[in-house]
Length: 156
Image (tube, rainbow, N blue to C red):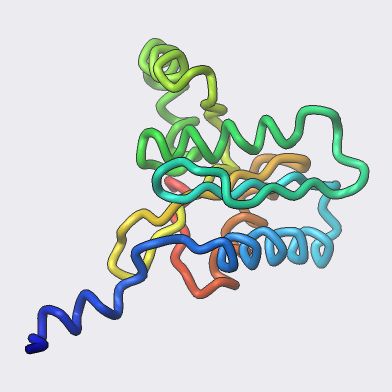
């Protein structure tokens, strides 16, 4: 027998699918081209930290994908967008240094690491973007998440 509670949960997105991750990555780069950003790398992780998508445009510099990974993974590991991590790095540098060590060095505390959430606020994964200014990286990531019909949390 179905209950109202069952119906409530059945409408909730619980997993970031490969199809959705690809849509986010593609839409992120589409926004970057529309806004004439520098060439970007974009990475998408699911909630468990599994890499779902990684795209690097022609012309990105050598380690842009790894920087994007650090933005996204750090945000996911600490459960806050990397804009908030940047503020933490300024206010509590020893904590961020320790957290960086705890996550194996995969934490880049600057804007461009954005959490992916469902409509109820549950974290589904994260997006990391690198290649332009950190603010532009964040704009592209947020746009990609919205294009997939999900909610972004940049940590602002």
